[in-house]
Length: 277
Image (tube, rainbow, N blue to C red; front, side, top):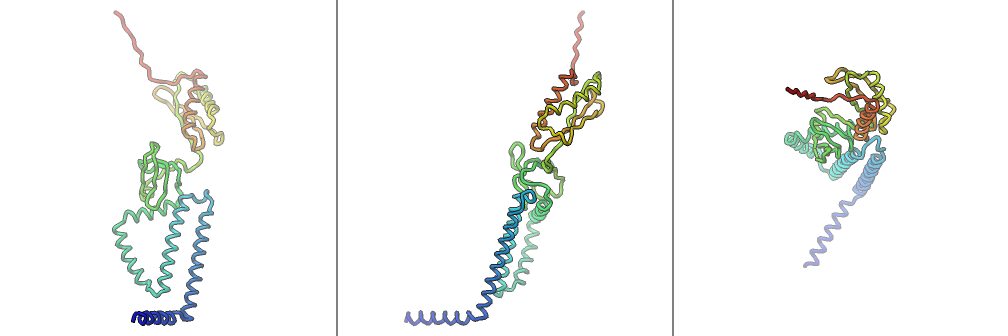
């Protein structure tokens, strides 16, 4: 009895295979296999092309995000194609996806806004990993650029997550965008000091600063009257990575050239007079 049922099932399976595997079905399966192979080759070529883009044209973070988007797009297209081959009506799926998408958009408006803003942030190339940025009251060095937010760490090593919508809707200051920066330092000299002499002395300060650039050249000018003296200004250029060193060297150099020229920097003094009876 058992052998008879097994034979019937086997015969039924063979009949189904013969009915299914026709020349038409065989050619269709071969065509599907060829198309899937072609899609896979194109997908791999696109990924390889993305990875070969030079770092100066696309940062590693931006390349990673584009790779993820390409992966999602490929698998969605692949699934939709396979479903269409097996006779699944895609119009019904797209309709259901549209309804679900509208409901999801209302439920997650903030996230959707951040994703759209993230696409603009990435395409604008206004910042990259390692840049020192300021958004509103938050400043820090960029660690990660995502579709939802940008993560930075502050100079005192605290992690701050900045939503992409905040970056789009407010002013972004990128201190590291250009390789060179300028620093403007103001200092005072007493009213009794000859201004031409003081200005010539100040012009010697950059000579003692190893990180100060000669091109663009430093600039010097008289900025006006101060409370206790005349205000002089020195503007110097340096590589952005040398900010702290340039600042330290500049102040040390100004003090040095003023000391050598016997120029006193004004400061508050208290005169005490003692009267004796």
